[in-house]
Image (cartoon, rainbow, N blue to C red):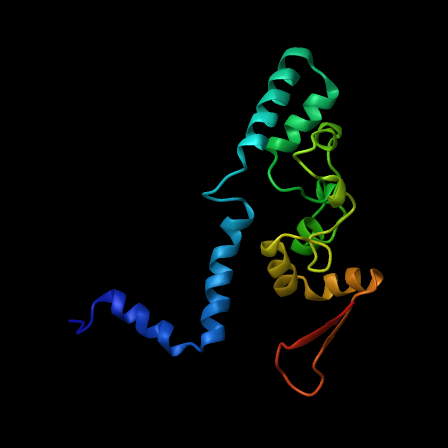
Length: 168
C-alpha cells in the first residue's frame, strides 16, 4: 500500500524538477488550449459581428459576408498552401503571412490592418501564446523569417544553454 496519497506523489515529482523546467512544463501544457481561446472565447463584438455576417450570408449569399462568416467559424488561420499537401507545424500554422476578409478590414473594432502579411513568429506577432510557441517549436524557421525583417537571433556558442540574444 502507498504511504503517500497519489496527489503527494505528483507534487513530489514536480518538486524534483528545477524551477525553469516547471515553468516550461506548465507553459507547454497550457499552450494548446490557450491558442484556441479555450475557456475565454472571443470578445462580444466579434461574436456579434460574426453572427451578423453569417446571417447575411445565409439570407443573401453575399460573397463578402460568406468569406467573413467562414473566417469566423474556421478557427485559427492555416496556410492555404497546406490544404492539399502535408506540411509541418511551422509551415502550416506559424510562418505564413496572414490575410483577412474584406468585412474584417471594414470593421474598426477588428483592427486587422496591422496584422495583414504578418506571421506568428516571435518577431512578427503580438500574441504572447504564438510568441512562445514560435520560439519553442519553430525556432529555426522563425529565425529565417526574422532575419529577413532585420532581426538577428544568435544562440550562445560557448554553452549548451538555450540563451539567445535578439538584436533589432
